Amino acid sequence: MDDLKYGTRNKRGDWTPKTPLKIAPIYRLPWSAAEIFAFVNGYFLPWNLAFMGLATVYWVYLTPDLETLATLSPGWVLLLLGRNALAVLIFFGAMELRLYVLRKQGNQFKYNHRWPSENKSDVFMFKSQTIDGAIRTFTTGVPIWTAYEVMILWCYANGIGAWSSLSAHPVWFVLLWLAVPIWHEFHFYCIHRPLHWPWFYKHIHSVHHNSVNPSPWSSLSMHPVEQLLFFSSSLLYLLVPAHPLFALYHLQLSGLGSIVGHIGFDKIVLGDEKLMDTHTYNHYLHHKYFEVNYGDGTVPLDKIFGTYHDGTAASDAVLEQRMKRRRDKMAARG
Image (cartoon, rainbow, N blue to C red; front, side):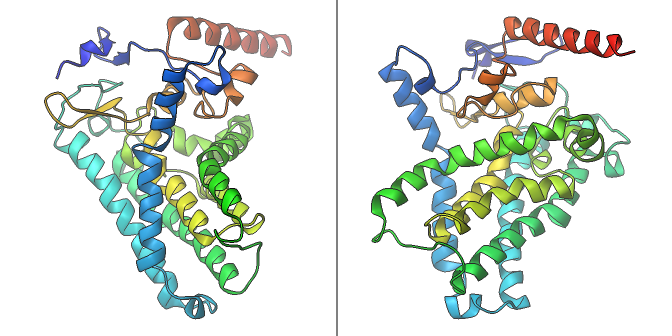
């Protein structure tokens, strides 16, 4: 597989896709049926449909009955914690093993030519980005994710919230299902942008940005306060007519789905001519440049507020001008 058919590689060995990023086509006129179809296809596949399927398996086979959920007890709480931790270990671990340990596709489609394991740093526990990320994931990330899940399911079992069913609100449930990723991204932007304010960045968000060259275990490598904010989007389903399955889907999208922006490869090679798009480039640029792409492009807030970077030299120039204005303003303040 020749990745130079799809992108370019600079002298350092960093790979960049040829096609610039674009915000969702529904915000761009004139509308193109082909672009909208491709967007809808990418909206569901491969990630969102997989997370919804996994959430359904969780609800049907791996979630206790209502009578059990109505009373908090270590048994079922630990069951939820264990299944979430196992899912993360399998999913993140498989990506890490294939792409970064065995290096099955070498540096094909890899944005940054460097390998995190070869760049030790004191900012990480044991000087390892991978070990640091795994520790933060399992000691605080998965437990906080599970705590939200426990609270939501306990509320459902005790009739706390605006719970309903598909038969009672069929149209609303379909619309809500379609909107889950949009709400997730909107909420993410709203918590993410303030985390780049100096005090919050220094004391909280810098933990995540230690991974300038992100890899799978960077996904949930966050300060616990950021993890609390990150998973709080699931509380929506206590406020609107919903079914717990939506909350499980949303938590899968947040927890397992966090890997989407941190794979570090634009495509995964599945065969001689078969590729899977990772949809990772938008968030990779955020880790690279820090001050761009606070969202993912489905909700066009970066475009509206002038922080969108499409991966081109033109966006580099816009960013440099923005940073220069900021430096000049700070210098003028003395």
